[in-house]
Image (cartoon, rainbow, N blue to C red; front, side, top):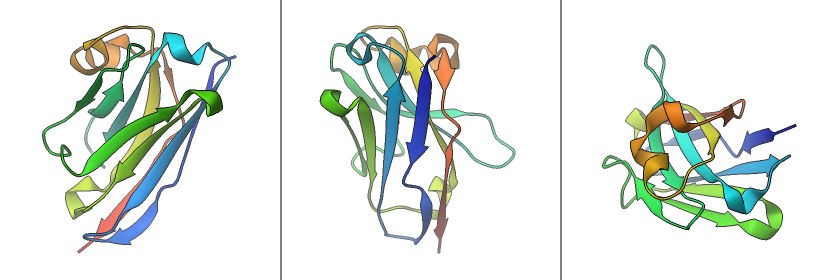
Length: 126
């Protein structure tokens, strides 16, 4: 079965960095887009970034220039490098799988994602 496992979360001070990993299994990695979402307490899931199956990359405006998404096909793993973290970045971060191409992994929202990881907590203190 499809499995997505996030890791790399933790607690940091404002201005610090974390690198999240999403390890996938049970699917053909190159045929899918992988997205990163986050959910703060009392709020819904928000798309942060995604990388499409045809290698297009998208970021939400609040993270552009600070976060970098990348993938290693040989390891079936997607990464999110998070720099200059701010308290408003505090959330549970999820990776998710979408059977789409092009910008739909960013513009389509949660509706285009079929599978979700368990999430990893990121806490940023001021």
